[in-house]
Length: 102
Image (tube, rainbow, N blue to C red; front, side, top):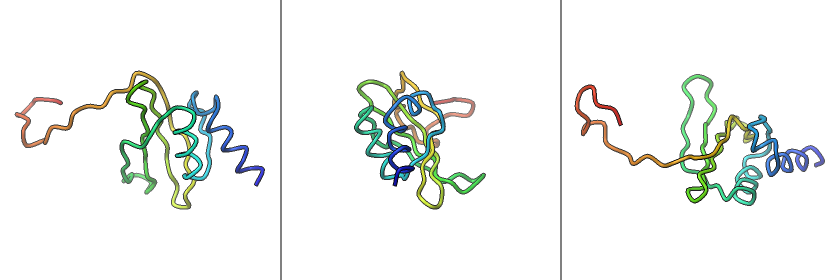
């Protein structure tokens, strides 16, 4: 229990904001990011490389963002975090012309 509490405290404090690789149960991470930074999930995807899930959280009002890697057993670890994040409007690839980028 003490380890879970310590990890949850790390998520809500400086280790998270510095991208320090702090880990905690996924539910604790979601709650901690919402409380400490006002961030909510905006993306998730399954990694082809290692089978982990990458999840990105963001606060669209402040621009803060956090990326976490979720293990198969439900532990989420900070990968990176930052500021000045922005959502990019999605454009269907078929609407792009050859050589054109988003």
